[in-house]
Image 1 (cartoon, rainbow, N blue to C red):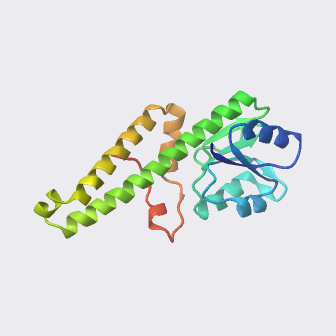
Image 2: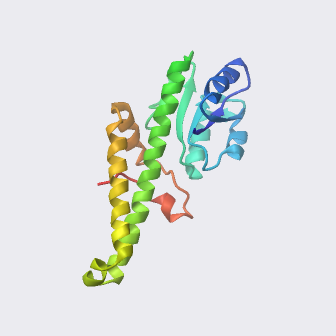
Image 3: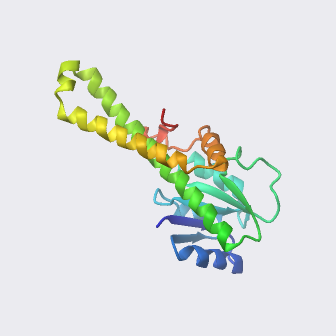
Length: 201
């Protein structure tokens, strides 16, 4: 079960989307950009963001969200095709309304899959930094006899396998969003782990 933030003006459509998602996920709802930012935390896996909100645009909210370092994946909800490049603007996808339940569910699944990949990438980089620190501090002979180093190597290999398995489930749309996201400032500057992002080699 993932945590989804629905950022949309109050109304029947917002209620419908919330009802559809609540069957499989924890759903938070915010009717304005300010409320969304007050509600958002690192537990949120994906957000559905309306193009226009009572206190501004969805694009402005996304820019603030990224500037403050939140990592959730975001889909734009729009009544018409946006006049800007959705992916380059930082959105993972755009859903043109009316949206069916099946399309909404499939989109959330994709966003959550990408979020799981993001988490694994961060885990991978953290483990690799730990390994590098050990290799700088200890001799090859000491490393060869170290149970800690052996366990760390095993953890890295496990994460690499998990990343490969996740990538195998990605379609072209996932891949485009993944690499576009590499240039997006997704991490808070006070957290070294959150600043590190990329793809496993």
